[in-house]
Image (cartoon, rainbow, N blue to C red; front, side):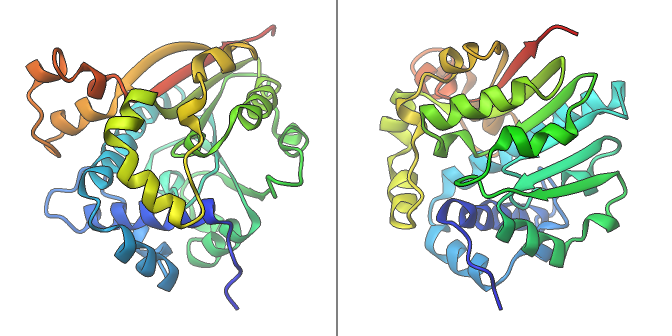
Length: 275
């Protein structure tokens, strides 16, 4: 029997479908050859509802590649790095990237489906998975056994968009106690970007019961309360242009379309606590 998933968790099938179609291209940008293994009839049905949203799909590929490239650089310098995929969805980086000690955290139904299709034991890198009911369980308590004495990298891809201020505050506090130094990768959008370019996607997701919440949250300010500061901003639209996914002249991104360039980014948020 297929275990039901919360609406937000079901969106993982959409991003997985996007990566599966990228992998089938002659020149894939991400090349996630595991994505198709994680699809099922729920994923196919969701893709049919979302497939006409062309630019959002391309932004997902650019976002994923941005984070892939940063993780590859970090793993080249430290192959034993602990990487936590929080709200992991159907991410397959533990199978695709070289190095790292991986921890995937998500809802029980997501973890169960993933384990049935892509078992953690088959990963070439050390991989653990933990199931957390985010609505009823304490994330801080569930992560406590995995605290490290050294730097930890956390990836929350496509996750902050669905969390309100209180949920983000609790998450920031949980991650702050995970290690002396925490580096977080998370994508965020500005209210201007949401208003001008995000409405169509949001309307479709709202129909699915998974509306965005982040448009009313000042993410850097909120996370700064837990000691995180912005180390870098990586423009997703600029990456789409650079990777040949969309024709957006650089001169326009630097002038008339700065709202677009700077409106949807992958943030690197760093927290250095006391050792």
